[in-house]
Length: 339
Image 1 (tube, one colour):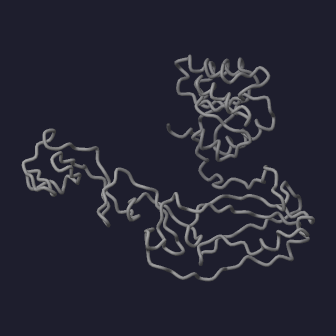
Image 2 (tube, helix red, strand yellow):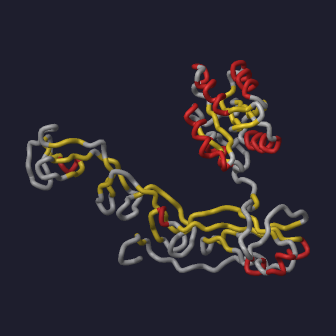
Image 3 (cartoon, rainbow, N blue to C red):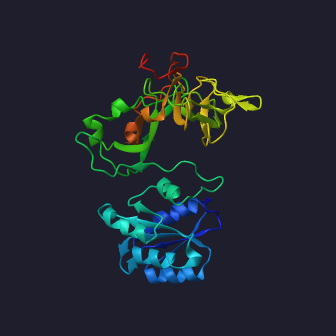
């Protein structure tokens, strides 16, 4: 489905002013206008009279609001079949929310939700020239023993990790000085900024590409594959072709006839570096710091944490470091020998 354009309109069916304001802010940043109603009946009337409405965000259950009923009524109207419906649910309603999906909902939004989550599920694209990064958010879960408190703090400075281009890592020199009990008592507040994927060897920042599952190379081409029945060999069509004839490169049988001697598969990916033939490519990481290549599933998730520090304490902290250059190593792939 194509991203919703700036001319599209959304309708929010909810009774919670905070949720309505949160959604309105997200949609406005994406260039999507927003209407609000507080009942299932009002939503149905608005959808029938306004053909521009293409996105519905509805509370699962509330005063005069029944998301399942609204989904059934929308899907029963042939003119509204392409309307996207997102149902807002609380955690204890997740099991019941399956009923809304069966009634025709596109997806569910677990409250509280972040801006990026709504944009992804609603297939929204930010406006050109709009913000590319969401505002930071505080930790909403209960803090673990010994952790810093969370929440807004007025008159504070944000101390955040910075990317060091020399070592290709995020560094946070001030962090050890912000975790003591005395700073916790003075109002230092921890803020979760992001989670990133890092190199499993050195912790550096990687780039990602689709590549060969065997060696990690990005130089893979899709090619038609032939399965020779007699010797069970599977290979590229180009390896079988000899002039106008098809000949098996393994058993050397010639004059092969499609259907009788071999079958053609939909195509596989052939690595130009190691020659491996695979049915699909794999997401491969390449560390910018140590040149290590690895399957993306092996990346280490690093949590980026910032600190809101009262102005009276901010001047006591050291500046962020510039970093020192790390050693560069040649490109290598994860194997049993170098793990």
